Image 1 (cartoon, rainbow, N blue to C red):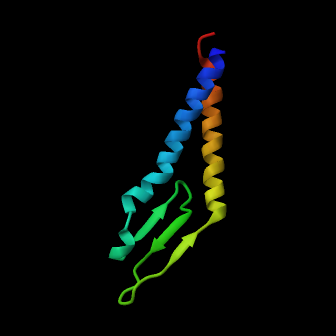
Image 2: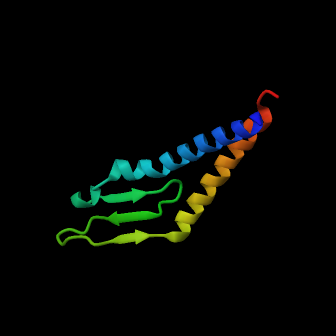
Length: 93
């Protein structure tokens, strides 16, 4: 039973880290499109992008890539599962 608890805690911690890694670019570039910048979300693949240098007219560029989002999600799940398996196998028995 302890191996299952170690797996679950490591899985949730790694999933949280992966979620933070995907949200951090968005949090750092939030509302940048209002100042000729780009608002970006996703790590390692940027699946959301809005804005850009469209001077002198307003910029309405909006990109959302479902395949990049799915790849980010898959990588996060693989990372979390690997961390959980490693924690379950290396813990005290």
